[in-house]
Image (tube, rainbow, N blue to C red; front, side):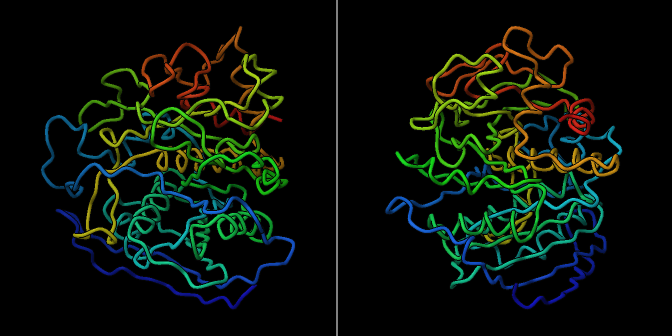
Length: 409
């Protein structure tokens, strides 16, 4: 492991909309020395990861005058927390590590996260930034992705340590090596990925990258409608689709039922065989089906993100299955915190617990751990009662699901 440098960033008095406050972000930076056995080689020629965020428009700063009808103007962390029942949990992610793997990173993430914390009066953050070997790329799209990912995790699990692992490029070997390093060297309980690439015929040979005892790998399914991409198609990752979440103005109360987002990725894999957990649940397809679960992702019902990579710097309304995946990464971290308190090992893989708690196709969601999404389309597939190829098992009813995951095997 490379030299570690401690930087304490004090963001000073931030003037954000009508509010201003001191915000502390403690940042550790390090340059990785990767063990040879963690280096991923080969892969499909020309494969590149693409970010899975969608930006709707410029946002109105928290505290400023906001429209009567809030949808489309960016939800706040407290609204999302209330909408899914996180606000009733006695957990904030303390003691857990969520590793976010992203190419390029963001040169402004320290200040952007500080601005986000200050505006919403969130607890201070511990952010570890690890640079993988190689010349790090610079790209504003990946910069915005970094802002969305980090801020979304901190919004729901503010006590968790965030390990931001920056791959030098968006190419296959670089980005998968970063995933291995996050799980095996940094020992993150959750590794989250808001990026995708095309499936390829021998992708199963690389599924080992997403297998590590004590780690759950969470991946966005994509923002281009029906179809499967990699690594979401891997049976070793928790694949997360997107929904449209309509809330009453200024609250976390549903205005309309949560529905499937039309751009959410989902469908059967072209190459991956059906895993045992989906067969046991009663999904009648021969191939791995995605997603496994879902969360808000539609940018028209998106969240407020502070970012300085796009011009002008400031608040943006954004979504995408990037938001969905990071929110589920936070959910797993909260469950692992409760497991640690009970002296139970952290979740590994996560699928057995998620599908077992959902019941089966014949007796789906008897205990109400999920919000079943039953309306919406993504091109080739429709949402329906029970499991479907846009929203999977559904979105989390966190107030009951997280405690159940905390005791699940």
